[in-house]
Length: 128
Image (cartoon, rainbow, N blue to C red):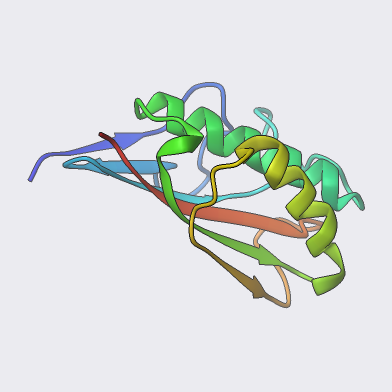
């Protein structure tokens, strides 16, 4: 099976040996996206909505680089450091996804890999 590894130039570059996504057949596996800008710095410190916006922007860019859109997403996992951030993050998610309702999981974690990050999202998409 041929695999294509995706690391778009307009998303922060991985600091460890991983890819933002891999396309295998028609399935795209998207690495967890953090609220990190192109410069590799945290965006929206202390603001879960601003962090979610950056996360979903990153997710969208990675999908586009793989030839997909947000409408191709078939599963999302959202990681939050506190359940209190859920309403703000879901509001931003709905702005990006509109009526598209992919199955999803919400997990509350004690911390994320970038200091100050409160939200992280990974997913799977399928191309037609």
